[in-house]
Amino acid sequence: MRSLIFVAAMAGCSLAVDTNITQCTVDADCEHFGSHPSCQAGVCVSSGLGPPNCFFGAPSQASDFANQCTTAQTFQFDNCARLNLCDDASLAGSLTTNVAPTNLGTIPPPVTTQPTPTVDCSAVAPNIIYITGSTNLPPLIKAVQPLLSAGTPPYVAVFAPQTSCKGAAAILDPDPTKHVIKNVANNSAFYYDSAGTQQFCLLDTNGNTVDIGESDVYPASCAYSVVTNTADYLGPVQAITMVVPSASTQTVISAEATHLVFGAGGNSGRATPWSDPHYYFTRSSGTGTTQLVARAATVDPLMVWGIDRLSAQNLVASMEAIDPSVAESVIGLLSSDFADRGRANLRELAYQQHGQTYGYLPDSGVDSFDKANVRDGHYPIWGAIHLLAATSNGVPSQAASALITQFTVPKLDPALVSAIIDSGFVPSCAMKVNHTSELGALVMFKPAFGCSCFYEQKVNNKTSCTACGGPGDCPSTAPACNYGFCEAQ
Image (cartoon, rainbow, N blue to C red; front, side):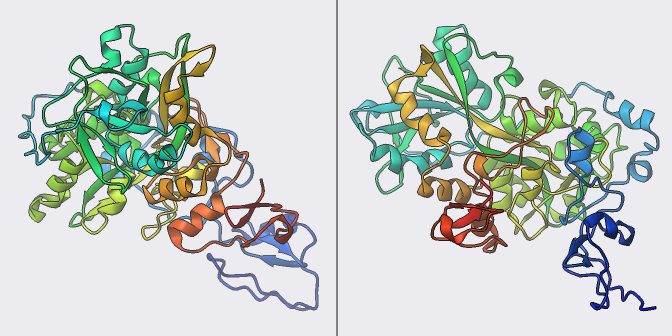
């Protein structure tokens, strides 16, 4: 009797057999080998999937998405050993342990180097789109401006930086005065010129009515609803991370630990090593950054512990300047685009959500930028960019439409897709899951025009997909030639 020759079933390894016999006819014949191998030409080939006891199949429940099999790098936070939370009741109870934050002081406002504008925004071009919202939006405005300039008629987007919730208020608040943006000292409105250079400008003396309010979170997270004659249009996806200085040894945090840190100020020192709230680097409750992390860990966004660093740039600079002797105590909240650019000095923490056996980074590994775990549902702290606008008969104004259409057509302009990816966002055409509320139930998502292959090639400089010049180059399993690669749709 011939024997099976077994080769370690790790990622990239196969189960080798005597090829003179047929080992399998269907995938189910291979299950006894573990790691969910597949049957290929009569041979069981390891998929390299893990971790142990992962969910194998089409996910439908929250636990399925969280614990589905993957080749991504895994991390584990031991809630029992580190937090003394050793059973389901204590784990669930920790998420309701709330302590009102104390006044930890403030940091000095940043020293501005912003020039005093000398140009009126209204004089920049005949057609202006006035936008306000999250400070995470400018890279996307810069990316889309060349397309706006080439439109018929051409438009220039003028952005007044505030927060996600103020962006929602600019369209949805019943108080019409909140629909107007005005000049703010050291926080001027700006646009991008034909060379892509940021240029500051002055709004009208009495302010300008907002065409688009932008938010990183659903309006409901800011206590607003999309009402009659308003609409919410979804753009690219952004992940939010928790980061530590590179001198820290920490690599993962659980939902329970996150709650005890930001919802209970370290739980009287028991949420080690993050026991001193003075070393929690946060943002205001109106930002999508704080909203998304807080809601992931069931913390009231208005009751988050820490010191508001006012901007992502300040937060990064503050963390990078921290004394290495206290680095183990430091933790910050940061959007992934800033976190990715700061990897030399900061480390993103893997997040182990409640009910999840292992923790995951937004990416498949520490050296990747593919947001694979965001795209397939392993990593939950993410949200789409929301573009809110007033409508008439269900249609936004011409100014608002000029920008919104660029982000919402099924097939985005190739230059815009590239710019979205280069800015650290995930275009919706590369997503595999979706939800309809912050951290709501995930569902499988198939975009009408997929771009996962192009996305992976851009961020990791490699893809397993077939390159193509047209549909004729693609197999029946991936018949669409999108952005130069064969996709399923």
